[in-house]
Length: 112
Length: 114
Image (cartoon, rainbow over all chains, first blue to last red; front, side, top):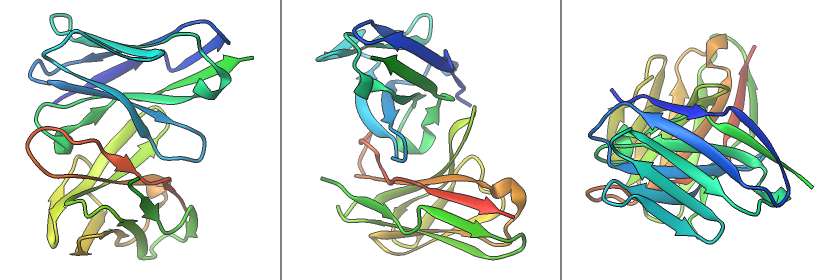
């Protein structure tokens, strides 16, 4: 089955700097890669996703890149702000939400 | 906005008790899911349901069962709670259909089994 590895487990950046979180997946048939943000005391919330037919997707300060050959994808946050502090999860799926596999999570801290 | 509500934020139970975790969604979603979240392990799927009275096992169903009597409500049941079931439990819902639909999560129930 699918296995998703996420690095780093913790990341601390200064406000205004960029943050990058990386994930690798094992199942070459996976074709959907969402990213979730989980704030303290809240459930995960989808912030961006990418499908295997594109290599990059951007939404304001957030971008995701996908390298299908290497089976890895990354989340890029530019101009970080303290409110970006949260735990971020990547995930990979082949067919539907039922086979979604999540990474272990990255705790991002943005220092003012 | 989709609202997924989990009935308890914190719950403390004793070993051997039967425990019910309740989840309600207000967007008429067909699909509902139960995950557990543990440090260093991410989210792992326990059970999911794609319709009333329908259920399918996820990756870690042992020790759990579920009930979906109404479309909006999905219950997770720990038949005989054990200490290794101490965890954060997350419920989610999504629309049906081919491919992927965004999952909407509740805020979680932190369950402690003593």
